Length: 162
Image (tube, rainbow, N blue to C red):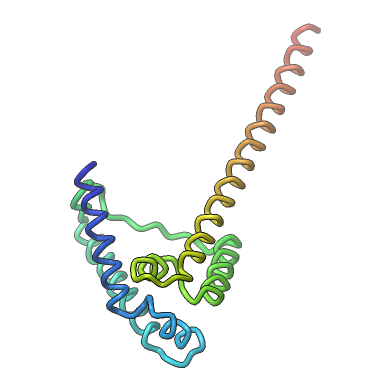
């Protein structure tokens, strides 16, 4: 487990460095991208996606396993659902308001960009609200299942008494 944690920390640091070096954390560069003034960040993102897609195909074709865990490299394909569309819209609105997305915000935080503190606080609040909502939904489902089970048990007991 320590190997995985150390590897994750190393990859995280390298990713943060590359995000900063690639100017993904520069608010002016992000604003120019969102206003369609400068294609630089779009081209960087699309080239990263292309490299990732090709890399995954090669790894799957070779039936490769993850270096640290030994798990087979797989992908999961699902059709877009309503939740994906809504999530993408919320992400896009948040990106437009904050002038950043989560990875550059972490880089901005380490660079001392003051307003990133508020943005990262908003991310943590949003995650907490989401988790509370999921817990409440799970508790409601558990209650309804227990109620249905109890009703089935009562009707079964009545039929046995007859």
